[in-house]
Structures are given as C-alpha cells and as structure tokens.
Image (cartoon, rainbow, N blue to C red; front, side):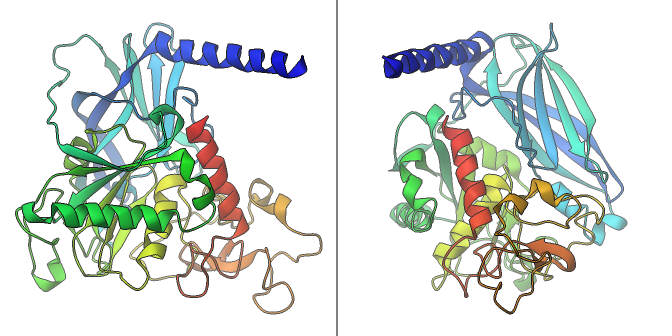
Length: 423
C-alpha cells in the first residue's frame, strides 16, 4: 500500500512539473545571438538576432539553475509577472580572452548566444556576469515579443545520425558532435571518429556506468578543405566552423570564435552539449563550460583521456588541476573561492570537498607520505603553483599519464550533474 501511495505521489509531482513547463514553454528552442565586446577592464553587450529552432533538448523539470557554476548567467522572466522561468550558468571565450595580455591594450567583440525553451508568452532576457567579488551583476536586458515577425524562423536541415540513443531527450544528457575540416568524401571517417568519441567517454567512470543516461548524435556538414587553421605555420583552411590553433597565441589551444556557425549546425538535433571533432593530426583542443568542446583526432596515444578531460570542462566546468602553461593572467581572484567543484583556495572550503575528507587528513596535505595516495588538499591547480589546491595527487583533470581515473571529488560532481540533466 505504501509503495502504491508513493508511486501515486511521484505521478502527481511529475505531472505538475510537466504541466508547468507546458504552461510557459513550447517544446522547441528560442536562441538569442549577441555580441560581447570590450577589453580586460570591462564589457558591453549588443543584440544580434532572435532565432527559433525546432527542438528543445534540455530538461523540462530542472529549469532554474542552482549549481552556482559559471561566470555568466542567462535568466528568463515572464514579462508580465516578472516570474523567473528559466536560468542557466555558462562560460564564454571572451571571458578567457579578458585575462590575456592582449586584452590590456585591445578591444574585441565575440559572437555569443544563449538558448532556452521557446516561451508561449512575452519574456524578459537578462544576462549577468560574475564580478571580481564573486557576485553576479546585470549586464544586459531585453524584452522579447514572442509573436514578432522579426524572429528568424529559417533553418537548414543537415544530415544527422545516432551514435548512442537511450531515450527521450528531455530525460537524457544530449551530446551533439559536429564536424570540422572533413571534406565531402570523408563522411564515413567522421562517423567513425564520432564513435571513437563515444567509446572514449564511456570507457571511464562514472560515465560508463551511466551510459543509459546519454544520447550522442552527429550532424554532418562538409568543409571545402581538410584540416583546420594553424596560424603559427601559416596554414589556412576553408572549413565549416572556422576553428584555429594558437588561440590566445597558445599553440595547442584549438578553438573557434565563429559561435553562430556552431549553433546553426547544432540546431539540427535536440542537444544539451556541443562537441566538435576536428579533422587534424595536430595535437590540441579545448572546452568551455556550457559553451562547446573541441578536440583534434590526432591524439592517437591518449585521445580517450583528452576527450574525457575536455568533456569535464564542458559538462560541469571542472577546472584544470595542473599548474602554469597558459596565456592567462590572474584568472582566479585570490580572495574569492572559485566556483569550480574540484579546486579551492581555502577561502570557503566548507562548500567544497571538506565533507569527504577522512578524519586526520591534514589541510593542506603533503604530496609525499602516508596521505599522498588518498583524498586530500594538495597544493597546485587551476594554473596556480601556490595558493590553489586540488583533491588528489593525480586525476584526469590534472594528467593523462599517471592515472586512468577521476578523483572522488570529480566523480561526485559528475554524478550530480548527470542527475540534474536526467530528472
């Protein structure tokens, strides 16, 4: 009898949640493209266009983001009542650029976009940025008339295929794989490379135990040339997503600033996360939280670990746990606890993995001795040699060569994120 009553309770709650989604949204996507412009001292945001897309791949239950992840936030309010309907944290390439030397003396614009379920009624879109004190400030506000004839409704249909299909996108983590630098005769190669990506991700825990919570789909669009731009070698290719090595003058940092093309291609399927497979033998890649990830296919000796490492950045913003070797300056304020779940500067360690530490483990934890093999608080991480700490001596977010697994803190954070996407 108790089981029957509990099942009836769950049915009522689920029905109410879906009814709320249907009250406010259609099962398709509204996308707002905009430009973020500025330098290392500030930013301004300018509207580009509003676009209707045919699918909504996100949850219909978890609509308001309470993770605290990300340096940027989009919030969607009902225009009439000012009720918060949807929110999502994310990061952007512009934010990384602001921490470079170039940004001290140069102003740039980057294309960006946010997506949310398509509203049934007029809404207000608010974009926020986390300031150096760790709090969010409003940078942009725009009211959208959902019946406006200026909303762009054209959409090109690209060829798509399934790599992993586990069920309803609203209850799964949906990954879309995009091709970069594949010529028209390399379709089968792209499909094979997509399969390699999926096989790599689901080789490692806790993803392999939760494969049934994921959908992975590919979208096909060929490029004129094979490969990608390598400015340092004076190599330039005509490709569908315009990616390049030497991002921020870091040789192996492979990214694209052409975010509109990325979003246009991804819109062919329901998706939560975008990953780009680059057809180049040169080692490199990158990933930004709730933005996109990209890796080259040339990392034959460690490509599985490269994929799963970069996906950690994309999926839940896991921080790099190694020191140095970046083009960034002062990326983490020294007096503010970083939001990433797997690093800490001990400003507010209670919010991190303190609850997981075994009794008696010293904080900070020596990298040698009896505590070195377990969970601890080891100095070095987030590109910092001093003052930043990581949970384990080794982890896939630190190195590919000394371990084949995530540390317990990263595993716990990944499982929580999977749960948020699949409620």
